[in-house]
Image 1 (cartoon, rainbow, N blue to C red):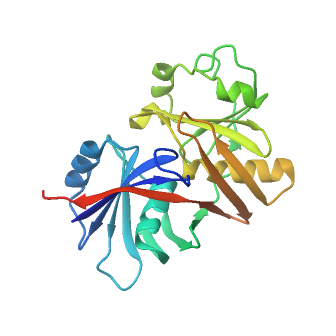
Image 2: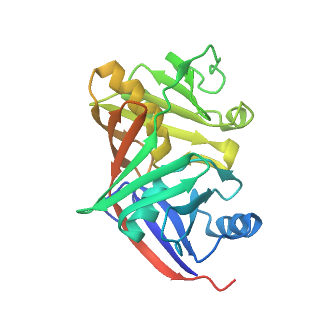
Image 3: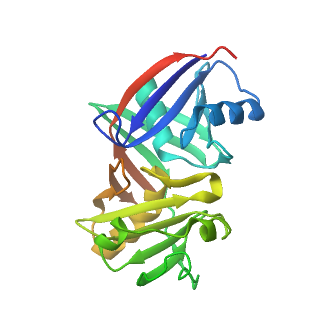
Length: 249
């Protein structure tokens, strides 16, 4: 089995978000895929069944659990396979295209719904302007970009809330964000494609613009271009393959 390590949402190696990509001839056992993902130790490892003429089965695993949707690992898979691809996933059918050095993903929109979640103990001393929830993520808007960049959330308290995932954002030409997910074994994700399924509809409505550029301000950092299209979000990013090899187990 061929495997790759790809840095996604970046045009240079050792930046963006790294993902494992494993190419399968046939569906694999979930426990085996989880063990491989734990061995890889990337935020997500994607497993795609390539021996098919129709849509390809695609699944994603963190080192700890399987997830229903992952943007950067889908971008990584499409970067490896090239061309136009259709995937069957736990989040439905997804389409992606690799062209001219960019990968565009067609994902479901996940506009955050307002809630009264109290995040004061998770983000102590932070002025929160809006709280909401997406399908799996808590969502918080804070007053400015500097607050996002300097956040030090209480990850222990976050881990035990709902799904243990929090997306924090502020306006910043167009917007900046960070994503924390100790509930699935990731203290901070470097660049999170699926998070922009919440960010795009929120900021597109707020800024009255369908096309935006978002910065995820983690240590590695990354850029995601978004285009809001009704109940779909088109995410675009670049990627770099840094390693390839074979699995022997």
